[in-house]
Image (cartoon, rainbow, N blue to C red; front, side, top):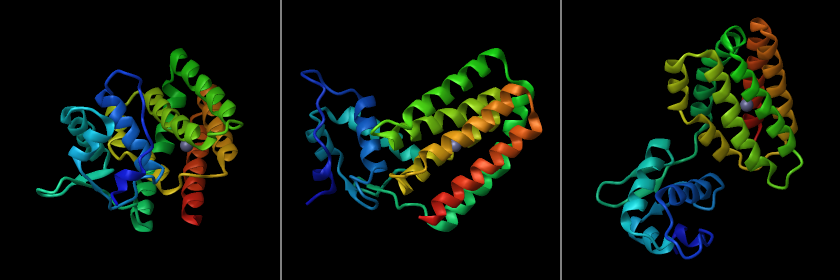
Amino acid sequence: MSALDQLPAFSVGARTMLADEVYGALQQSILDGTVPPDARINAGELARRFDVSPTPVREALARLESDGLVEKLPLRGYRTTDLLDSRQLGELFELRLLLEPDTAGKAAARRTAADVTGLEKEIRAGTSAIAEEDAYRQLSQHDVRLHDLVFRAAHNETVRQAYARTHCHLHTFRLAYTGSYVADTVAEHSAVVAAIVAGEAQQASVAMRTHIERSRDRLLQR
Ligand SMILES: [Zn+2]
């Protein structure tokens, strides 16, 4: 049996799925473990499953490859990558600790009115997601947006891109698809945003460091 047999049925009505939708559906299935690590992915089989031509499937696989979620096998299609081991996870968090506390401090000094609006709106989205049935999935999206908004508020596009290229949220999310620490994360995010909004650079930096260290410890406990 192929790992792809586990994929849920996708329906977009009578129209054909777009490359974006194929990408989104596949990414979600890899993140939630429906398609496990080290599973073979056959592009032809996927195209039949999604009832699309090979082109959107190839596009989706190329994007998943740049996410680090699949890798190409010479002449044999693709496989899903392995989960991060604890050493790789430790390295990723070391990088985050180098970048993000400093970035939060800079965000407190450089944020514009539009940055403040965006950050506050994101905290409201995270807070209202806590009570939802699919809180963890929603929270993972909130987490991606929140950290990106802090990078944007620091107005250093080079640093923001360097962080984005690690795709760290995808890899950590894949390690811990279900979690019961939704409320903690949102509370920690709120502390970071409150300090940025208040223009308190030192406090923002400390709040971000605390959040990343706690996120790392929550993941390592699992
Ligand atoms: Zn976070």
